[in-house]
Amino acid sequence: MLKILKYSFYDLIKSRWSYIYLLFYLLLSFVLLFLNNDIGKAVITLMNVIIILVPLIGTIFGIMYYYDSKEFTELLLALPLKRSSIFLGQYLGVSLSLSMSLIIGLGIPFISYGLFQSAVIFDFIQLIVVGSFLTFIFTALSYNIGLMNENKIKGFGFSILVWLFLAVIYDGIFLSVLMIFGDYPLETVTLVGTIFNPIDLARILILLKLDISALLGYTGAVFKSFFGGASGSFLAMGILFIWAVLPIWLIKYKASKKNF
Amino acid sequence: MIQIENLHKRFGENQVLKGIDIQIKSGVLAILGPNGSGKTTLNKCILGMVFPDKGKITVNQQDINNRWNYRKEIDYLPQIANFPNNITVAELIKMIKDLRNVKSKDETHLLQLFKLQPFLNKKLNNLSGGTKQKVNLLLTFMFDSPIIILDEPTTGLDPAALIILKKLIEEEKKKGKTILVTSHIMSFVEEISDEIMFILEGKIYFKGTISQLKNQTQQTNFEHAIASILIDNHA
Image 1 (cartoon, chains in turn yellow, red):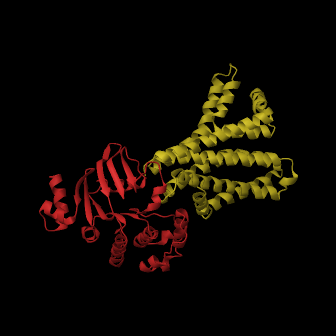
Image 2 (image 1 turned 90 degrees about the vertical axis):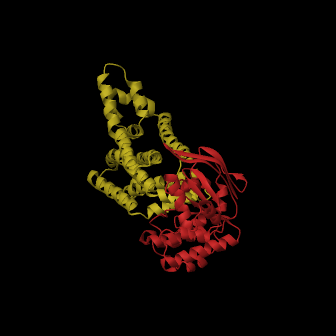
Image 3 (image 1 turned 45 degrees about the vertical axis):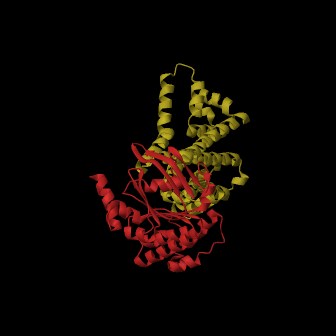
C-alpha cells in the first residue's frame, strides 16, 4: 500500500492543481492576516472559509482523481498487488497531498505573522486538524461515489450533491426544524443533528474553542457543556474520526467486490 | 496451467459467460469470437479483475478466489493501454518493476527491439497510440512470467513491430510458457497459435487446432472457416 501511496502522492504533487490550491491558501491567509491585523480574528474568518471550501475541494479532487486514474488502476489490478492496497493507497495519496497543501498554505503565513508567540496557536492547530479531517472525510465520500458509479457525469454530480447537502441544505433543514418546533426543548435534537453532519461538527468544535459560543444563546451553553470540556472535545474528535473511518472502510469493502 | 470449471458471469441483464470449461496448457491458445462474446471478460476472470458468479478457476493448481499472489505468475497486456500522464516512460518502467518487486530485470533488449530509447524521457501523454502499445508490450514481456495473457496485442502496431511481436511470442512459446491471445486479425492468429478456442454467446463453440476447424467447417481458408461459424449461427 505504501508504494501505491508514494506514487499517487508524487503524481499529485507534480500536478498543477495542487499548486493552485496551495497558492490559494497562501494568498487567502496573507490577505486575511493583512486585513484583520490580528491572528485570532484571522483564524475565525479562515474557519468560515475552510469549513465550506475544504470539503468542496476534497470532493472534487477525490472524484476527479478516481476517474482520471481509472485505466491506470486497471493496470495495477492485473499486477500482483492486493486490491485494498491499491485503492487505499490512492485514496491516502489524494487526501495526504490535499492536507499538505492546506497545512503549508495556512502554516507559512501564520508562522510568519508570529503564530508561535501568540495565544491562538492551539486554536490554529485545531483549525488545521479539523481541516485535515474534513479533507479525509470528503475525499473518502467521493471515492465511494466513484466506485459506485461507472458514469463520470453521474459520479461527479452525486458528489457535488453530497457536498451541497452537507454544507448548505442540511443546515437549512436543520434550522427549519428548530424554527417549527421552537416551543419544545430541542437540545438533544440539536446535538444529535450536529453529530450526523461532519461540517457542523467541525464548525461547533472550532466555535467552542474560540469562546464565542455565548453568541449561540442557550443552545450554545448546552453545546459548551457537552463538547466544551476536554472530554467533549475528545468525543467530538472521536465522532469526526468515525466519520473518516467509516467511508474508508466502505472504500475497502466496495473495492473488494467490484468488477473491473 | 490454467483450469476453468463451469464459469458463469452476468453483467446486469447481459449473461456474458454461460459455463466455460477449459484446461489451458503450455503453448499459444488464441481466444476468438465476435465482439462482445466474452473474451476480455474471460481474461479478466483469470486475472481476478472480474469476479465470476459461478465456477472455479485455478492457476497452477491454486484456487485464485480472493488471492492476489498468483498474479506474480502472469504477465498481462490490457486491450487499451492508459498510463498516468504525468510521468515518463523510464519512470513508468521503474515504477512497474518496483510494484512487482523485481528490480533486477533488464529491459534494454526489449527497448532496442522496439526502438523505444528515444522516448525514454518523454511523458506518456505525448506518445502516439502505437508507441504507447509498444511500451505496453515492453511492460508485458519484461518480467518473464510463465503465463502471458495478451488482449488484442496488435492494436496500433506498424508492420515492423508486428513482426517483432510474433518473434517474441515464438520465443516465449519455446520456453514452454502458457500464452493466451485474443485478436481479430486472423492471419496473425493463424501464424502464432497452436490451438484456437472459439467463444460464441458465452460458450465454447469450438476448441482445437486450425486444421481441425477447417475440416469441421469444410473450408480451406481459416478466415472463411471462422466467418462460416458466425454466419451459420446468425442465420
